[in-house]
Length: 533
Image (tube, rainbow, N blue to C red; front, side, top):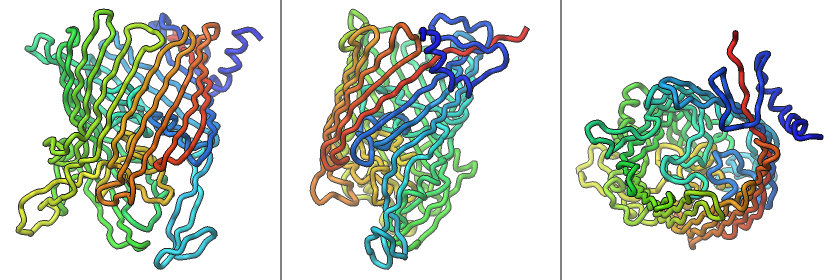
């Protein structure tokens, strides 16, 4: 079989799903393809295979992968089609569709029941019984449309996002939007890139985005929740805001600084204790609430304005003579006024990144120190939460990152929307869907490079120790050491074909002792629909 025949065989399934009108042609992805004579899209078909010990894939194989792969055993087919906006035009548009189907292994979770079942444990007036759960056999990962006009964009639908500042391939993950979880259906508007602020002669630029969306993981939450303790919110809305400023990037030294905020609001919350529903509350999601969510505020029990969390971000970049760059950055988390006021000690991500100007054995490297142990101290008192009291002094501590007493954990389909360094709720097989190990400290390293023009690699590793959470501390600290080695091969004789393999392991009490591997085979190419004559 010649190269053309082999490429067409790989593409057969993709073409069946994205077949266009008569005259549609497909080409291997080439950067100099002429897009001026019709609609040009990128089609991609990918097979994902994973196997390993334990119920979940190793930490670094799972993390910052948009929630696509979580289980230890997987055989998935991914098909996608997208059109990117043309940045050379004043007005342009784009769209994308991306779905997965196939097999993923199951994991047992506990659920409360008044009736005894096989393998159940007696608790109070009922039983905690295991039940098997696995990801959907088919799901839509992305479906969106977008328009761009000059420096502004508008996107509607589910589209994957990753950190605006940190490396998606090398960092441990952004504190607010890391690309660790599945995308949320939303409407997002903002600047395409940094824009010059008038009257600063390009010395100061601004970039910002704002979005409102709808959480779609209600079914997942109902299936995995234990209905024994804690609370469960259904029907919440999601909001994201960001505003960054940057000094002139053409200079050897440049600084970027600003804030980003993620939030839940609206929906209905049920509270359980010992398997009994004891309280229900419904929160506003009217038009006034949308405006209130523009700024993180707390209106007290009478009018709760949502669960907001965010980070102060600073990045300093220095460009070397050969064009390589060194970046030093910090992300400092906050959950309320104390964190916004930097009263949470050394908490945050502190990192250094090197990016080479040319491909080589080491084209990029990151080292990060992460600390989330202060959390503004152990005490919290907000008089807005207790109207009518005479105590007006505030002590806004006990931040309990990614937790809120009215809303779900800051996660989507069980995976942290922010940093995966804080163990995501999906790992809690007892059905307690909160972050149980968010008082944590450790480090993370990442290195990537090219062994040849066709072979690249990536190595990630890290260590963390956790003391549980401020509300529920561990009896003794738990730790974890995780490592992943990944290699990718893109044969020059078959443009568009890529083969990637990864081996990862976890050792410790947080994720258990797991070992696993992943193999992906993908082919991408350009699909052109000519203009009608």
